[in-house]
Image 1: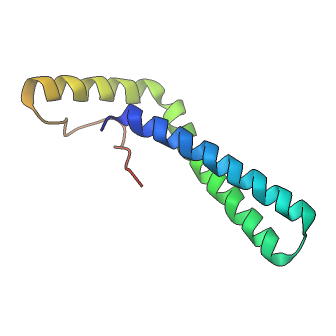
Image 2: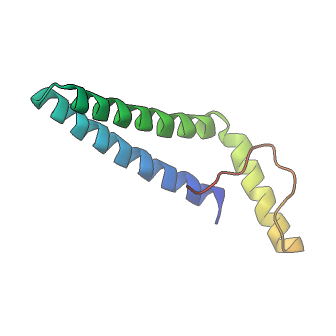
Length: 93
């Protein structure tokens, strides 16, 4: 699976995290108590983590693109991925 596919999956996961945070916000507005606040805080932290991961990729988009291209050439010519990359491999969750 390519890094670009993983980035697309991360974008989708961030969208879902944003929707979850929105629903937690609505619940907190309707019922302000410790359990809804904890749920809100958990959803916001999850959204923050997702967006932070995407920001890392966007801040280094050129390096990720070059590594992706080099991986593709390596697979074509040698049948395996590059051992050295300028960027860390993205991992599936």
